[in-house]
Image 1: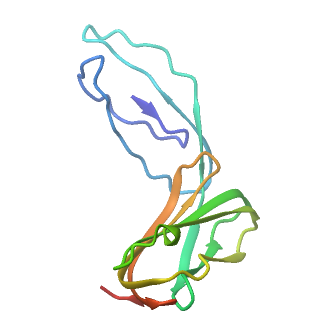
Image 2: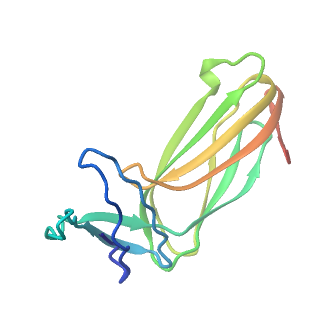
Length: 165
């Protein structure tokens, strides 16, 4: 059973083999810092105590204004009600005819983004020809994805055009 730290708990899951990995998800409706705990129950109905908490930081971000040109450009907006600290971002470009390894990965970090504020990010120019897939990921300081968006594009030299397919 999971306690999600927001007043919600999962139902009992299982039974599972003791070496089996179990995946479960939860969606928080409000931003904030939450402590997740879990406990187990054996086949006889004996329950463990609650685990040590795992702390998660739920961020409410928007990723908009994706555009091409000389590289990939996007706007990050904090649509929540509190300042968000330490947002890591990365832009990955894959595909094209040349598949230049120097084109593939761009990253950065934002130390603090106040509520309602925006920041623009960009990959910088790169050289490629053909269809490419672009993924922009925003993560908290522990590397947990807060938001990921993937778009397709076409490059001709240094010019990137984002496509609706």
